[in-house]
Image (cartoon, rainbow, N blue to C red):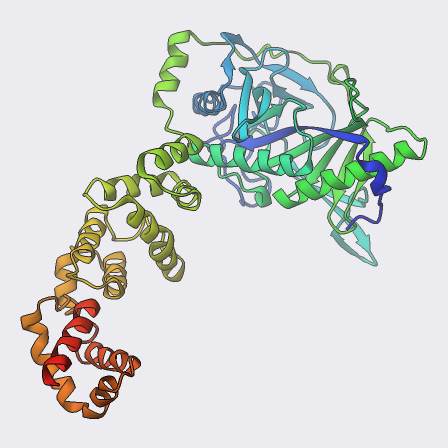
Length: 498
Ligand SMILES: [Zn+2]
């Protein structure tokens, strides 16, 4: 953790301002401007061609699917769509950019003015979302003795570059500087990830770099309108490291300012090991990039009708679904959170409820039993053999006392792994509950005859003796006896024998 600690008494005088830039790799078959596969984990520099390597004489050709996914994300995040937008060249000279410029969008991004709700009433503005190509990936190595090892920040004796990633379609989602605490930044990325995953447009794996986040952080005296000088933090590889890095940077900036120093506008890297941010380089300004319109690509033009067509195809988003489930089915917060982990859960839930099952029961079975089975058997609900109809049927058998809740657990496991209809599985396993007095009475009488001592204890007023008898009935019937009915019939039979 951070070794820097500002005077806690003074910390209340400062306010932190955070804006985030989130990069999301789009899940397309091919790259943004060529037909190379968009795939993670291949041998380095095998998924490349003259176009994405920027060789002379090549021309880019725009991937339509990437634009469709961009529009989807933009509308789901409440953005307006620019009727006319274009690509620009962002010129910079790092080895990971084989063309010496990145095709991006500058003054006319495709989408702008969106928003994301963190919690009821807490809304973070989204300034813009633009489409650009990803860069290659650099791996820095440093000498440790005679061996090269992956290096800590800032140290590099040798750099390996993999251009497989160069040209992969990337969304840059820029927030307004609306966040005030590290925890809010954590929530923002978490919610953003939820929406993007829900739409199925990226796998958002931070550990593989398909979701990356940079944070712009500044502090100012509480009450001051003018923003303080900001630093940009990079190299955060998990949600937790986003929160830790921002908090550490807040403490550092306050300490610098309180000791009479000034904040230098720069890019800093998060060093997980030391729990601090480390200066990497001075921050570039827009003019350093000498943007100019990309002459090799046509402009993008979208009519209102085309935007409406995107809206018509948008699914119900998780936040809206949670609200609807709470109102329509009376489910609690935990249940609606569970049912919106992925779109399929909600579909399964609603289809089961449509068979006439009680919504609260369905949600409970999904969050407890089905989630446990999924984990134990390493099979997702979607890949299992269980259908909403068979679950609905089982719940109805349980509700009508034909199957006990405990036996239901065994039945659902068979339905999950083998499929079939609930009624047949119940009969096959011999779990149909004995619920009629005529069926039960002969069995109970036999148990009473075999256990005179226990019966005597019950007669002497030892209530626990009845539990012993119920247990023996359950054992005898392999759990098929209806427990409530068994109890009352046992009392009745013992009463008659007095
Ligand atoms: Zn290519």
